[in-house]
Image (tube, rainbow, N blue to C red):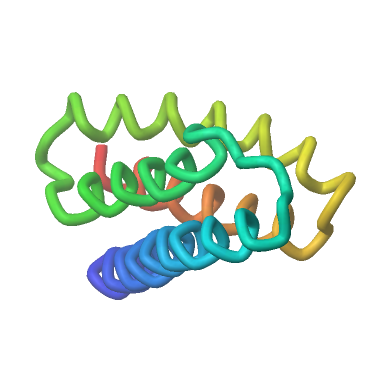
Length: 109
């Protein structure tokens, strides 16, 4: 259980931080090439979901946080199924993370 918490936490930090870095750097490149801007949900949504997953892994005793994260990750799984059409790797990696988190969720309850 402890190794699963660490694995989920490290992945959440790396992916969430990487997503924010790419969003910040991409904004400059996008404007320099004259491309249209990306909405705030697309830029901040995945980082917020990973932050929520990280918070639930850090504080597994908080049941409200666990249940809220479960609902958000269930919605993310639906979105990831649509992502599978565009990028198989990203969709599968996201679904595997969600599956690992739901395993943690089942053990934490």
